[in-house]
Image 1: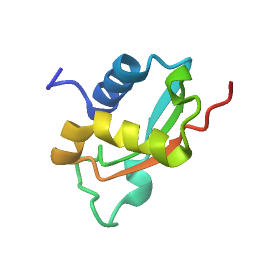
Image 2 (image 1 turned 180 degrees about the horizontal axis):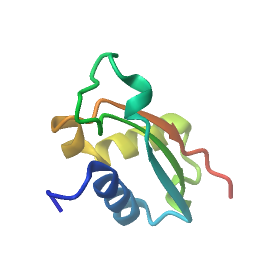
Image 3 (image 1 turned 180 degrees about the vertical axis):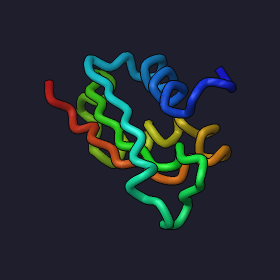
Image 4 (image 1 turned 30 degrees about the vertical axis):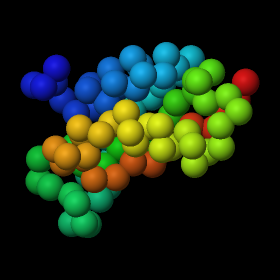
Length: 90
């Protein structure tokens, strides 16, 4: 899993952690070229759409904290920013 692209790793991590009904991971790194945390190799800024029954009865802050925790290793290896749409629609 270490050699997979970060987008694929993020998708796999979130799939395994939250068993989402819907999941989309978009690499937006090019939109942030030259900004803090951006690197020439990309894979630093992502947008995530995720819907999971595990988010039911959790605030958006709680949902986002769960996502950040699940991606802990990615933060240590170059992930810089996430835009998350995790609002439970169930």
